[in-house]
Length: 421
Image (cartoon, rainbow, N blue to C red; front, side):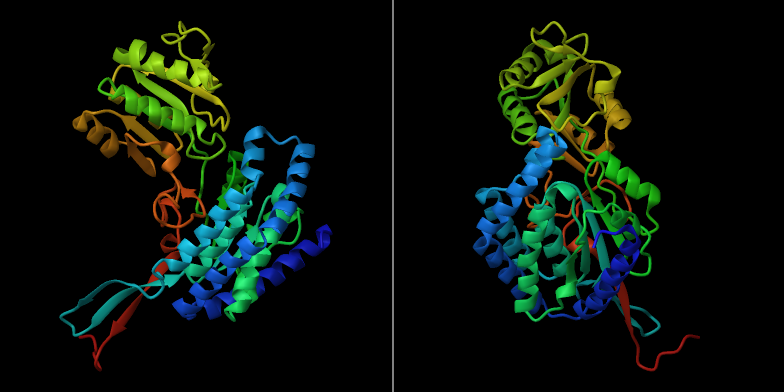
């Protein structure tokens, strides 16, 4: 169904089914949710050939659309990535169920006993670009937290997402849970996105996962609350007391392991005292790996660099390109990050704990790292099994959004005929 005039009716029906499924999931046992996710994990692996065939169609579609190499990297699935998807589903399944957890409890002098108990959010709408594995991650995490989810994947990953979604539905069916608990919008029509953003009667929160354009659109137009996943303008500050070997290894990994993910390093800030030593070594190593380095005037003497302009600061390249700038000290590095960063992930390389503590305490990014690759900015690497995204806002969820972050809470108040004076 792709006719414009039918989109509102289509989305209203999806929303109605999701709300009904959410009501049942709110009291579904942990055992049944676990069973659904284990079955889905097995189905993903059993159907890996079908998923790869579907992905080939999407890769061809992406080539015809002229997607960038970084976007094509995000779109591609192979057996190793499907194995990781399968393992991620199992990891989420095996986590402690967050629903019903008593966060805190206390007694009052009035005779009341009060508990704060974790509860599902309800219905979550996830809008994402390219990466079809988000279909599995988002479906699993929302189900684990007792939520129904409406998934609207990018048009370029349409076939892959459908193949993965079928495995999730099989898991629900095997566990005798409502199949409407995880729904995939069955159209590439962008009108479906606009419709989701105003479904206040059916959706409790929207999670956008994609580029600046998508997130900006959602933030501007959504009437439903949003967990914002902004672009990853990731900085690494190389301090004068950085260890050269650690720094080389971390920077190369942070930039080149996978350039198309939001945790990839996009800007180096190098203390001027080590610009000609550690800094030059790191920059030359990056260029040897094929990375274009846009360097400021103090680093421009390094053969092979290109001159940096103001447009290179605060830019998410998602490619084999990085900006590099010298700074006088950690304070100047932090000032640069505050001006050009996206509050996603930032890192300091130093052996001086006092300098590290200053960086970690005074910056307010969702994730701050010390002597570790920014490619670890990932819910799976945080022990969450998977993530829906990295929330860069400050309300409710921040950093990797896993199952626990997809819950709210309610108060359970118990008395014994207790009345208020």
